[in-house]
Image (cartoon, rainbow, N blue to C red; front, side):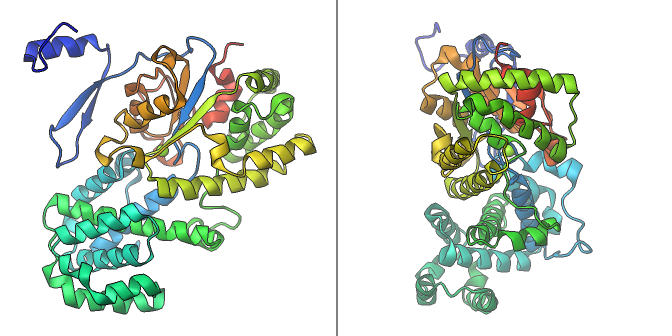
Length: 459
Ligand SMILES: [Mg+2]
């Protein structure tokens, strides 16, 4: 840096930006933000860490867990509600090729903004108003996340329904929680009669606020059902197959986490057989016998190495903390059950079940949307920068960190935070993303990184 003045010329700015890197990402901003876009330098891409890994940072939805499906379902339901096209006959639903790349891995605001803009002509003002009032009432009466409640109240005020917040019926409902499926329609109609005429949402920004509140309400209602142990009925409804859960760890994630934390030790080779079987069964990935044998031996060595040198691990998610807390608790619960079937000694199983009793035992960092601002979520670097800081990784060790993401914006966020070893782990719904920012694209997820790449550790 040569300039003494904070305000510099365009030429000086171009020169300084050029000094920051050889590759840049162009990040468009939301409609209400200045400037229209940001240009950010990316860490040089590397395929081999500069030394043994010290940390792994990884996304939650779609990378650690299967929950991306729930988010997509909630977004589609939001569009159905504000358009009044509730059945597949009235509207076929989101387009896999054209919509999914824009609604996975970014901030909720960006996902909703994309859908509101794209499906603008389908939006029906009467359906939008009624479904908004329903979602606002649900959130204020039944919602468990205080920040969400505060945002909905703020939005009601901005959308012309300020008086509704001092309604005594709303106060009573907030106490009695009597917003049951049987009663909610009549209550919504009553509030619609009282406050519907003041409701205004004509600008894109206002409609995005509406869409966000409806989306969260749908998503959080499902999370509450899952929390209440009704997840299986919901899973049957959405996934159609018995035995499948709405929230599951991605295949092999439990074993990979246990290994990286150094909890497997000499039991790593036994657990590896489960890892390989899990990948074969759930992802259809088949590895050559020779590859598997070599990998088994290397993973056995890694188990012993990580016992002495455990990796620091952080979840880095654009989901809010309320959601991440429920989701990762459920993921741990499922991994605890999986451990019963792992090929490791009984006393090791007991130890592992204890370790997986809480996600706080696993993660040295747990970074969510609440740690930053909605406008600085992925693809911006902030969440990953916060994670590196929380983990205490010095800058000269950023090249010994591996980052895993299932979406385009996630992979850009990793590189933008200064991490050169970025691994894209696309799942069914994100495989159409552009993964130019990644050094590797591994559809087999973190387990594939272990089996095929020895988790990028020197052999
Ligand atoms: Mg994701």
